[in-house]
Image 1 (spheres, rainbow, N blue to C red):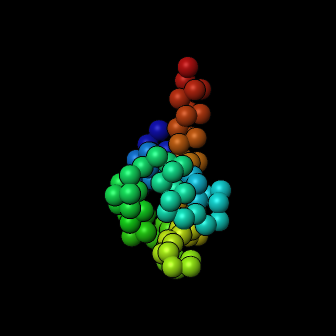
Image 2 (spheres, one colour):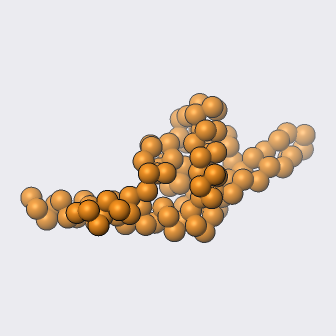
Length: 102
């Protein structure tokens, strides 16, 4: 049991970060407003979770102007993809192990 818990990544424990990474695993790039709407988070809450994932090198941020409006897009890094996949694999093993005991 302890082996499965070792691969559970604390960076993905919150619902918001789990949601952010789930979206970024499916979409190549996603802008701030799309993440905010899909995850139903406030600007400040989303920004703090994005910053934490960026500091962990799990996502890449790109800022640009579209017309005269600033647009920020996010993309999962390769290390972020690997870390998230390992996290999901660990959760899956934990669930499977617990189901076998029932």
